[in-house]
Length: 518
Image (cartoon, rainbow, N blue to C red; front, side):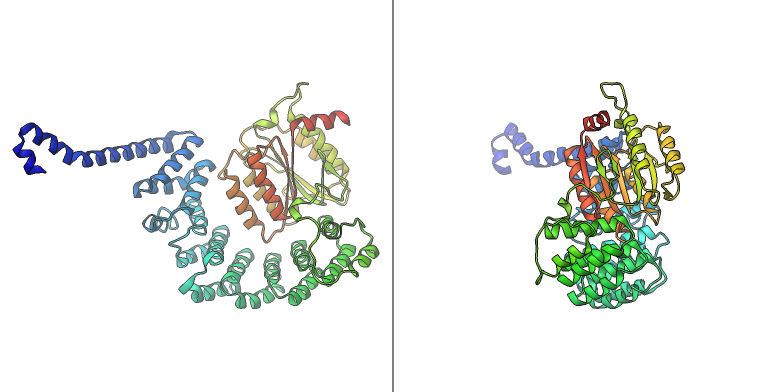
């Protein structure tokens, strides 16, 4: 082509030369475009609002270059959940081994920033290729129990998804050592569940040992493993655990027996109904019996026994747990939502929507003031409660649950009525604060369903993190959603279903109408 161009004169030669360079020029233009995206993203990550920083992370992840991915990793340190969560989720979707290698370095697992490390260790549990289980052990041995648990959770998820191949034997030995070691009980429990996914035989023996441990969390982990045992062994050990002093252990034992669907298991649950001291667990047994039988015998043990004695072999009737009716057995209600617990903490979202006004000029906060006071005043004196209103930070009425005496109820209602903080709604940190109380067994969250503040923002990710954190606490997450977007309702419903709670969505007008009817 070049020779033919020279024979046809200078003009044609110049034209041909330009044609030869056209692909290179096009490539140069593409590079310029990439650089423009990088520069815009750098600016947004540094100066942009949270939503702009999140959008920048999405664009950088889509580019898929080393330079853009380094910026994604830097976004893990963002103090706002929109950008930080987006970066964490993006890492879990990486398929390029060269890019994932960056995650294992100082920008990720080896970072000096604790939040960066925590996010990176969690993301490793979701990647499809390039997982190196050896990199997780450093996190397990860290001084941070949350990081250690997260590293073990990533090992567990990877083992469940595809196994650890050649690393399986060595990993099993390491996990076995963690279970038997001197790590905190929650970390040992996480190691036990990870071991179950790697070596079920070793996990069987460690679970039996865990059942006699002094730490509630480890006994709870052991009982979770018991749920995977053969039917007879699971029945024997779960029935024995119904006498455990810890309600969280009894919660798992009840769930194990419910899954067995045998006459012996049902009879054991009926006997437990007669002696169980915690209202939430009594409600759960009644719910199971009601949905399984289609009958309503309340606390009539003789009637339940007569029905159970008619059962033969396994069966499957009734509705799934997630679709159970929105009702409790305490006859105490918050805005029409009946409580199931006598050990409850109320989490109340004080973000912007709480200060919206109705046609009468009252704010939603004023309506909640009245409904919370009425709910607290209806609690039996034997109950215990706490109240945690939250914006970007959470402020608890008391550090731990208090008895529902007339004095405490009056103090709490008046204290809440005087709260006037405004701002974003950081529900994740509020939930973690509530879970620090070892006596609470139910959280009732009153919210518009949209997290808007703190280090966590993505609801799907938040559900997974809260469920993991709750495995050895067994606290039910109930939610009362006021004018929540439909997309967010799904996530709250999932959180409730996976923790033994319930979720009810209402409109603000319902609050007004119910108040007017009083």
